[in-house]
Image (cartoon, rainbow, N blue to C red; front, top):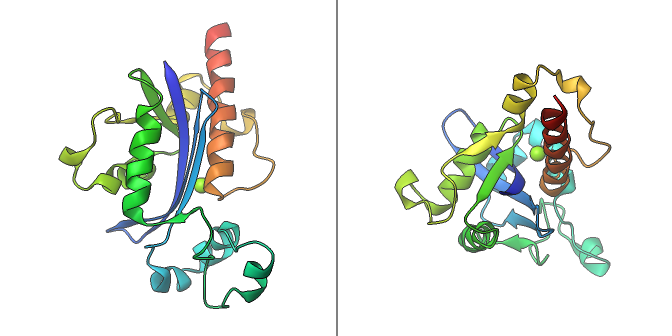
Length: 183
Ligand SMILES: [Mg+2]
């Protein structure tokens, strides 16, 4: 088994889930991070929590780019991690396939993450070959082992940066696997 731990930042309003950014880390050492340049910026700008917690982590460019970034931009459009949703869909499918046939997807409170991930490719039936149809949830494994969230390793920094969150998910998921083995 090869695990991919992932995390998405998204805008959800009870009806739709819109991708903002995605971070993935694979057991084989590969990492992926992308920001959706097609995200609904006007709606995000009106969302206080996202503006305070998620938007600050989005790429703002380097050096002169950063200085000249228009104030109204939520992220720097020229950053190489900023990509069209369609490109992200292709790259994510490739990232998952490259992990081999025994890949498992893992996320934390991952129900919304799984739906937003699967919707990269459209309706459920369009899920690409090689992409698992479900995501394992760290919370389910935590509960199964009779542990509280506070018993687990805590995230030191970068919370709500999708890649930092994915890396932390990997740490917690591996920690839980060790606990499960010694139990
Ligand atoms: Mg997150």
